[in-house]
Image (cartoon, rainbow, N blue to C red; front, side):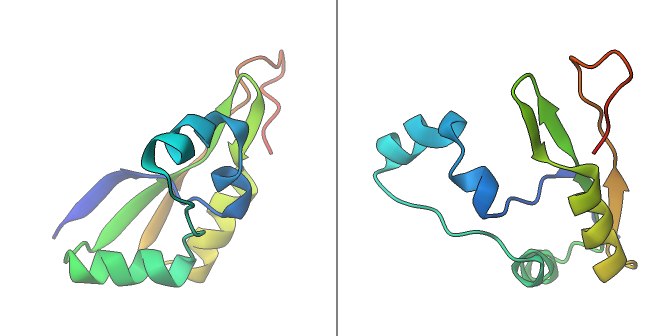
Length: 96
């Protein structure tokens, strides 16, 4: 059994984030959002049985919310496990 121990599933809102502007300039290309179906297809191609999808919150806010990870887990319960995150700058953890 092959397990991808850390994956982050990017949609359109993450790809247009200013943090990735230098990557877009450097590669001179735009990036299309990755659908859940594309993720599962890539896992199948690589013979990955299970993936651990992680939420991601940085100093500027949420890039991949806990809710987005939960939706991915619900859509593919036998293929995706989730790792929650918290907002590092929030006193109460401020999960989304």
